[in-house]
Length: 89
Image 1 (cartoon, helix red, strand yellow):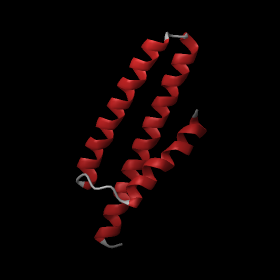
Image 2 (cartoon, one colour):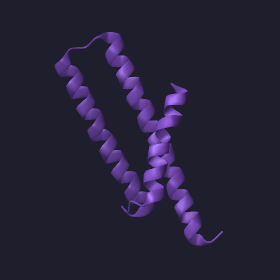
Image 3 (cartoon, one colour):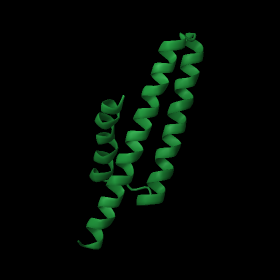
Image 4 (cartoon, helix red, strand yellow):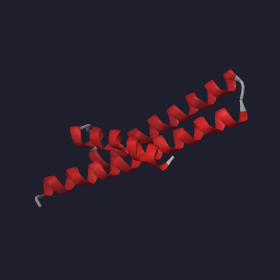
């Protein structure tokens, strides 16, 4: 394997696991909000805080693995994490 392919595979796997973890955590948040029937304002604030956290974490991981570069393999890895997290929940 060339060094470029190894780097792309590493970035793909990193974003795949990040996508899986974030979508899994979002599913847990949705279940929590449904189970405890929180008010609309509190639910909005919690979801907003989650997406701010998710955006910051995604940007940080992208900066660490790909120097902030978004390629098709990083986007594909992140989006393929969704079906895996749905299968787990």
